[in-house]
Image (cartoon, rainbow, N blue to C red; front, side, top):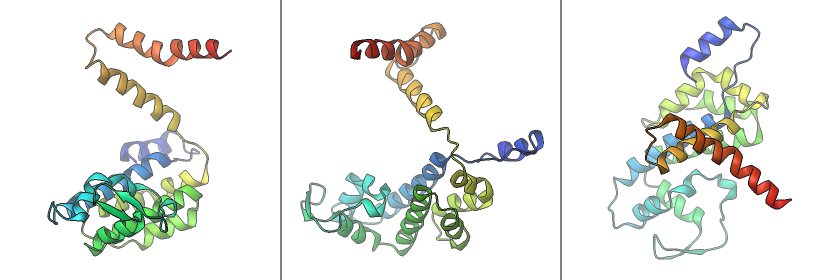
Length: 205
């Protein structure tokens, strides 16, 4: 959603449809929700069950609510007792109404993207009201470029494959703490991306 891309592409390619990648839409709102969670977490004592749960099991807040178990109780080491994930999340959301509203907005975006529901996503963006937290900025950006964002649900185009390659290259660089020799870096990428995969295919055959 870089403004340079959004405004430049139509000038160069008048008939092109600008499509914001679905990965970046979800990433934007999930990052915002994480920041809101951390802010709320810092307002409660570190010894409280809410703090420990939000600190250690933060990933459950990013899952689709429909995927969470609201019936079966399991033991949570973070709080030290048996309970459902839904119940623990609800207790944390009760700490701050703005946190709950941000969570609901996140879930609405997540569900709309998952189901490729253009109307639901547009309604979520247009009816969103400022909460005074980090979610405001993300929703404002999505609303500003809503036509390009909605195209992500209208079309099947995605650069998810490319993002995966970029992530793998970053890991290769990080595991070696950087490369001083550019040729060695390129050769390592080739080995990881091509040679090792070909070897696995031959062994499988």
